[in-house]
Image 1 (cartoon, rainbow, N blue to C red):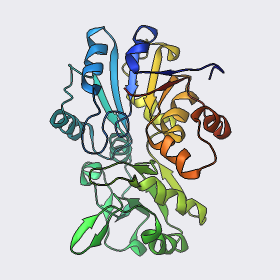
Image 2 (cartoon, rainbow, N blue to C red; image 1 turned 90 degrees about the horizontal axis):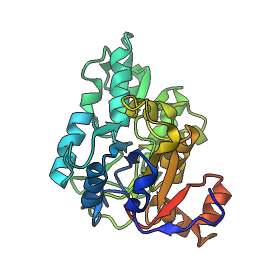
Image 3 (cartoon, one colour; image 1 turned 30 degrees about the vertical axis):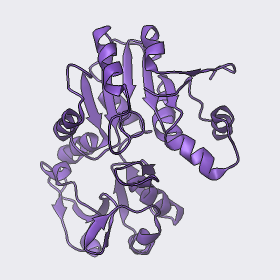
Image 4 (cartoon, one colour; image 1 turned 90 degrees about the vertical axis):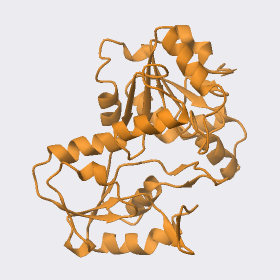
Amino acid sequence: MPANITTLKNVLSLKNDFDLFVFDVFGVLWDGSRLYENAAAHLAALKQAGKKVVILSNGTERVKAMEKVQSVRGLEKGVHYDRIFSSGELAYRCFSADRRRLRYYVYGIKEAALFADSRYVEVSEPAAADFVFIGIPKICREGKTVNVLTVEPFKRELRKFAEQGLTLVCANPDLRAYVGGYDEPVVCQGSLARYYEEIGGETEYFGKPYPEIFVAALEEYENIAPERILMVGDTLETDILGAASLGLKTALVTSGISYKNMTDEGEFDDLRAYMKDLRIEADYLLEAV
């Protein structure tokens, strides 16, 4: 990252510098309840300028489901973006291609579509499983299924899985995300996987920051040089690290998860210093998309 980097107002400031723009969803286009102001207009402006636009999410939905969700939110394929890809779609591809009849146990809310065409067999007890798949981590409270803000409610079960030597498969490496109805970002599957690693458990991931998801998402754009592709995200450890590892340029939105992490930790009050300390440095800072 250049030492004299400045914070740009929005992504249109970089319109002439790149041919393909890749956008994360939560914290970049969507705040958990609604689209950020001007997000749809600016994506449409990029498309009208002849740019390619890809939406890349660590969500566990498959592509068709994601397209429907984005349409409800006000983002239409062909108008605002060219392609959507997700960690869920990548997991589906891998599960479907695997001809083994592995047994899996789902811990959390199941994403059934990911296993629809696989030979895997779901079991009702972890002791009978070859691996544990982390579903969406929620708990039951007063008869309702709700999100939580810490990994604490899941630790006991995770320790049991580790004692049994089970591999934990995570199709959403995000640690936290903003969702509707919560002022604080809630726990995502990645937080459970990280804790599992901390207690000595084995994990496998699908999604950012791992290169496979970027390669799959950009497979239709091999003619575009990496330095002409910009990844716009709000999380240094997933969006920025993953894209930079493949030689893509990166832009960090200054109001997302990494900004929240910085303020929570309290050691830094400037994202430039925070990025330098983490050794994950974006090429640009953006106030918003």
